[in-house]
Amino acid sequence: MKKFAGILLCCCLLAAAATVVAHADMGPKPSVTVEFRGFEGRQYFATLLSRESRWGPYYVFDGDESSWHFSEDPAFMQFVEYEDADGFCFLQYMQDCSRSHEFGWGYYPPEEFKILLYFTDTGEFLASEGSLERYAFHSRYAFSAGGQVKKAYEYGSEAAAFALRALLTIAVELAVALCFGLRGAKLWRLLILMNLGTQLLLNAALQASIYVHGPWLGAAGIYLLLELGVTAAEAAVYMRYFPRLGTRPRAKWVIGAYAVVANAASFILGLAMAAMFPLLF
Image 1 (cartoon, rainbow, N blue to C red):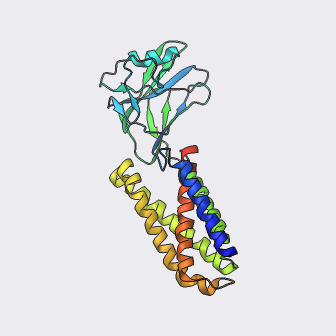
Image 2 (image 1 turned 60 degrees about the vertical axis):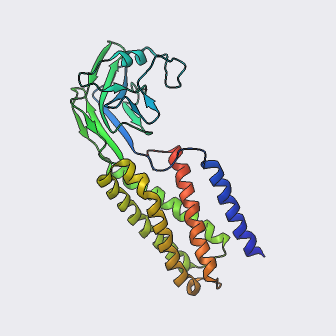
Image 3 (image 1 turned 135 degrees about the vertical axis):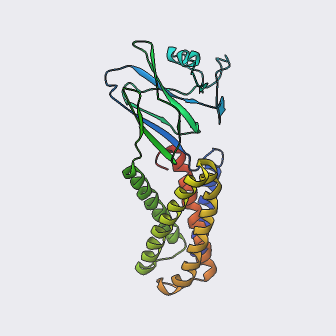
């Protein structure tokens, strides 16, 4: 009876979490981050000009000041009135980068863009030389005072983000294992090693897909399929080895149900964390 209550509790918590996160557009999202170098002491705003007049929820200003994109800061209208020689557009998204010297667009950043700065102290503009494109799931650029731009992909940050995702996944799956009564040092060791392996494969496959198919098809299009594949692989391994490694025997259907619930729980937690910390997920 206690075992059934534990499994039921896990399922209820999972359903509650699904209810909370299902109302938002969550999941892995591409982002563009620009680091500004040599602009210390300057007061400036930054934006990405898009080749498209509409991209996701962002669009060219149509004069409607009631729009949630509209800003009363004078820099907003300066960007609206800016005319790019190649026809790139301001999509009503900007940031004051005077202190951070960094610009981040973590939700529907344009795929092809130019970087544009507006200096509030002089009224001058500075645009990047030529157009740029997102080259990775989290594209990072360095923009110098002369207008030059170079890629500044942070492999250390990506490694740290992967370590955090793997740690959270393992923590969630161990917690769910407790709910299912799956205990034992050897069993948990296999669970941890299996998750490290599947996380490495999942992230490698996801990144490769993004580079080949682009950010949207590559990320969103294959992410769920990869998660289903991971769940199936873990279920097969667990059902074979858990009965002989655990402190108490468990039916194979219970072990299979654990693999499904554990992966669903870690998947939902990942979606929620992606919504709160998009640059880390």
